[in-house]
Amino acid sequence: MRYKDISVKKIPTDIFTGVIIALVSIPISMGYAQVSGLPAVYGLYGSIFPILIFGLLSTSKQFIFGVDAAPAALVGAFLASIEVEGGSDRAVQIVPVVSFFVGIWLVLMSNLRTGKLVSYISTPVMGGFISGISTTIIFMQIPKVMGGVSGTGEMFELVKHIIKTSQTSLNWMSLGLGTAALLILLVSKKFIPRVPMSIPVMIAGAVLGFTGFADRYDVARLENIERGLPAWKFPDFTALDVSDVMSTSLTVAIVIMAETLLASNNQANRNGYKLNNNHEILVYGLGNLAASFTGCCPVNGSVSRSSMNEQYGGSSQIVSVTAAITMACILLFGTSFIQYLPVPVLTAIVISALLGAVEFHLAERLFKLDKHEFIIFCAAFFGVLLFGTVYGVAIGIVLSFVTVLVNTANPKRSFLGIIEGHEGFHSLERNTYAVPLKNVVLYRFSGNLYFANIDVFIDDIEKAVTKNTRCIVVDSGAICSIDITAADRIVTLYNTLKKNDVKLYFASHIGPLNDRFRKLGLGELVEDGHCRMTIAAALTDAGYSAPYDTEEAPVQSASSPEDRFGIHEYEWAFGTNDKNSKTNKSK
Image 1 (cartoon, rainbow, N blue to C red):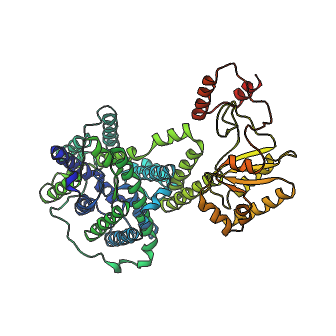
Image 2 (tube, helix red, strand yellow; image 1 turned 90 degrees about the vertical axis):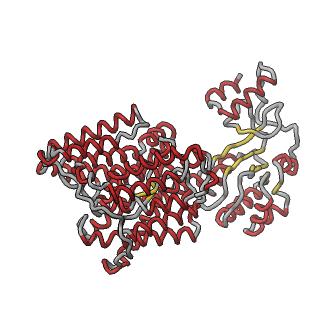
Image 3 (tube, rainbow, N blue to C red; image 1 turned 90 degrees about the horizontal axis):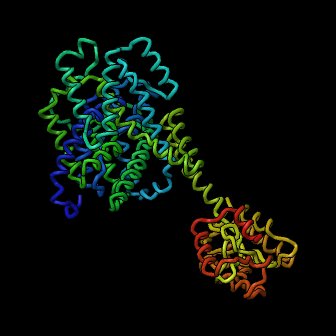
């Protein structure tokens, strides 16, 4: 925490917001603890020391740390895979071991400076992953609203469990209370978003439990929570073979790092400050070690509670510190009311928070703006939903790198020409008045040349060459590097063109690219003067000087040069329609 960045005037608001965050965290943390396979009280244990450590050490002013959806779901899935019943003594032994190794992995990642890797995980991938996790947990929680127990597995198993619950153990009063609570929360979130309605809903539920109404209709209530802070102890490493937990703990650590860094950086950018990513990962690791020593499941950044913090005006780490102290006070002096809270009401609060984490708005935006990225979002979403969280993580990571590969393998390219009365060379596709040079191909390639895109580069040039072509100039201003595969292909292209009396030039690139050319066998290009600082210099060397001859007559217009300059600037900014371009050129 950087005390010099804290505004004294905002401290009262931060303290008030911290108290709200703590109260809201009671049902949410207890619910997620149960999802992870622990008794509900461990969610409260995980809401003290990990949050306190985060508040004191993090460079994030507004983000909230704690027991959250994604790690809880991953740990719960792991317990199910090794056939350990949630809430059992064995689960209480195993989960802290997972948290311990998650902490170790995160500390190691910090030392390896992996914070930069998060930039390779695209927004559609992470949005789909978070939405898939949230939706999976919602499906898990629905049976608890109906009066049953939470489900496990993937979507088909969860849907089957929901149907079975509706047929065998449906409690109409439980369903009514949960549905009513959920509707109140959703409506209030829409119309009075600054009111923390989950608190009055929780209090109303506790009243129903205290008066005996819940018991009268067999509505399940939370277990009794004993007063007192959690005891610190080392996890029991004999509870299972350590090798069994390594892959799961690594997966959880990656999810915590990626999800929390992306969300916290997004919030920091929105509010005008920067984070030290590698330091943040270290803080995540220390927080998870603290969770392990208090018996809790892995902890993570909470998107829903961070949004709530921002909504109520929280501006510094004092919010997290206050929330941790408030939770400690609740455990010491105020646990008696928790046992009266009906399970369906608690579940409704959890579902409401999860619905806020499902990024419907991002999916809608991607669908409207970029269908390709929408498909990536859906792939990550359904990967988690259909195949599980572990496979969802793998799908998300693979999709991130595939996205990078696809984008770099198909960079922007264009053929260039001149515009009468204007300096420079301009895209033929984007400019109405641009015309190609006679016997010359000007080609712009906006990306590094390597094995995945060299075929595109070669194919574009070969298709553009005609029997009259005598010179090809590549505008290589955006090419900063080249690999050996691309270099070998360019050597072949250069020699083929040379035999056909066609000169190939590279122009406008940075000097180090020439060093790379020489190193990879393209030294002849540089030594023969076929690498030039400007396109004009390359054309002059090839025997073409301004004013240049063009393949077609320069486009004439009834408008003045000033008007044409305006059109040129407009098309540079907004582009032009091909159909309109042809129509204009024919005039």
